[in-house]
Image (cartoon, rainbow, N blue to C red; front, top):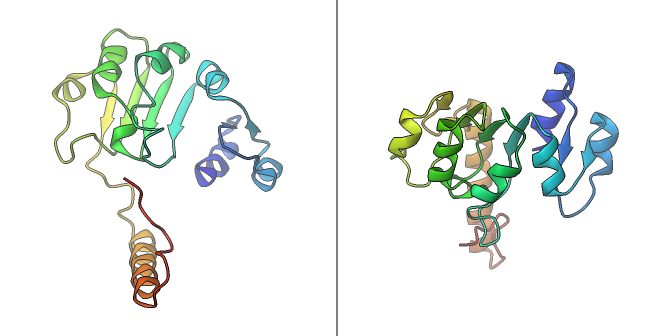
Amino acid sequence: GQAVGQRAVPFGLRVLYVARSPKPEFEGATGATRVDVRRLLHASDIVSLHLPSTPETKGIIGPETLALMKPGAILINTARGDLVREDPLARALEEGHLGAAGLDVYLEEPKIHSRLLAAPRTVLLPHLGSATPQVRRAMAAAALANVRAVLNGDPPLTPVFR
């Protein structure tokens, strides 16, 4: 999320973020402001999701949160497919509440919800967000580091909780 925020600033965007703890270096470098979820959704023209899938975050974007979003706002999800409830998102697009949606992840990959395929103002990608040589090398290095840690009797460096 911080990398996206840093890239947004040169375009003149004001960055709001939600996090458990403040990010003073990020705030100093970007002028970003830490806010609560309600304020972020109400004030943002663009909401970009960058959070893990946990029991607390599954379905975090649903009818209630979509209703809090500014009319005409854009929702971007490149994080995890289960963060967004797809039927309510399709409805918000069909009814014109949201201006657009950009998705790179879906609830049931590789299947894309039929209403999202038909919804207006959508950009739907087949989970390509990490398809760069640099990211793939970093992913391979992280996987190797996790394997080494486990083989040495240590916990994995980047555990996945389900």
